[in-house]
Amino acid sequence: MAQPPLRWGATDARPRGNRRRRGTPAALCPLLAQLFPELAPSSGLIESTLLPLPKLQDRLGIPGRVLLKADHALPVAGSVKARGGFHEVLCHAEQLALHNGLLRDTGDDYRKLARAEARALFARHSLGVASTGNLGLSIGMIGAALGFDTQVHMSSDAKAWKKQRLRDRGVRVVEYDGDYSAAVAAGRAATLADPAGYFVDDENSPRLFHGYAVAALRLRQQLHDAGIPVDAEHPLLVYIPCGVGGAPGGICFGLRQLFGAAVHCFFAEPVEAPSVLLGLLDPTVPAVSEIGLDCRTEADGLAVGRASEWVCERVGSQVSGVYTVTDDSLFRDLYRLHQAEGIDIEPSAAAGIQGPARLIGSVDGLRQHADLARRMDKATHLIWSTGGQLVPESEYRNFLEIGKIASKET
Ligand SMILES: Cc1ncc(COP(=O)(O)O)c(C=O)c1O
Image 1 (cartoon, rainbow, N blue to C red):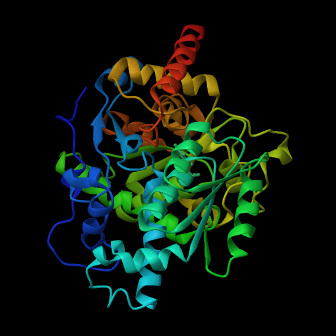
Image 2 (tube, helix red, strand yellow):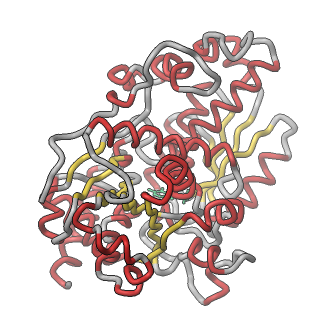
C-alpha cells in the first residue's frame, strides 16, 4: 500500500508573500498571534496538519491511501468550528472598526483591533451564539479575546467542561433544558433584543460557511506539498462529521470549487440525528422528531434536530452521500484510532472513521459511482477529525473505556 512520507504541517500552509487583502490570513495572522500566544509557531495561522493513518488503514483493510485532516487539534478552540466562528467574528469586528474609524481601510494594520480603543468599542457590543458546544467555544474564545460582551446559549446536550471553560474566560453561558433548536431560537431573540447585539446564526450564516470553505485551499496546498494527486484517475474521498451542516457544507463547497468531480464528500451523522440527510431528501427540511427520532447521542456536536436550510440548498447537489453511525460505533472507532495511531479525538469527531469501509462495502453506492469503484486502489480517503484536543483527560479516559467495551462486542 503506497503511503505518504510523513506529516504535512500547519505551518507549511502559511500564506506566501506579504500582500494584504481583506479577510486573508496575511492581514489577520499578526492580530491572531497577538491575541493568542499559542499561535506563535504558526505566526498566527490557525491550521491543522494532514496525517497518514498507516496502522488504522491496515486494520481496516482499505486500499489506496487513508489520511486524517487533524482539525481535532486546531489551535485555540480545538475543533473545526474555529474555522467558521473565527471568520465570522473577525468580519464583524472589522466592520465595526471601519465604521467607527478605528481601522483606516482594509489595508490597515489589523493589530489595531487589539488596542484599548477597539476593546472599549467591542465591549459596548454584545455577541451571541447558540451551540451544542464547539461553536460556542470558538465564538467564546475569539469574542472574549477581542473584548466583546459575549453570550453563549447552550442546549442540554452541551458538556459541563465546555461551559466551564467558557465561564473561565469571562463568557456568559446561558443554559436551556431543550434541544439545540430551542437554544438557537432563545439565543437569537435574547441577542437581537439588544440594538447593539450581533447573533452568530449557525443555521443561516454565509460568514461561517465561507470560513469553513477556506479549509479547502489549505488542504489543496498540503496535498500538493505531499505529492498526492487529485484528479479523475486519483479521486479524493472525504468523510466529514455533520451537525447542522455548516462545517461539512462549507468544506464540501470549497473542495468542489477546487477539485470539481474528482472530489466526493460524504457527511456522517448519528442515527438518532440525521438532520442533513433529511434536509437533502426533503426540501421542507423537516426536524428529525417528525420521523420519530429523539436526537439523543453522545456526539454532542452532531446532536442537531433540524439542518440548516441555507446549507442544504447550497450544497445539496454537491454532496456524494450521507451515512449514519451509532454511538457504539463512534466510541469503538475513537478507541481504534487511539490504539492504532495514538490520536485522541471526541466522539462527534469519530464519525468520519467509518467512511472508507462504508463506501467500499456499499454495493449500491459503488454501483452509482462505477468509475469510482474502478479507481479505489488509486483513491485518497480523507477522514476529517473535527474536535477533541480540549477534552479533559478524565473525560477522555471514560470515552476510551466505553470504546474498549464496544470493540469487544463487535
Ligand atoms: C466536533 C464537531 N464535528 C462536527 C460538527 C458539525 O458541524 P456543523 O454543525 O456545522 O455541521 C460539530 C458541530 O458543532 C462539532 O462540534
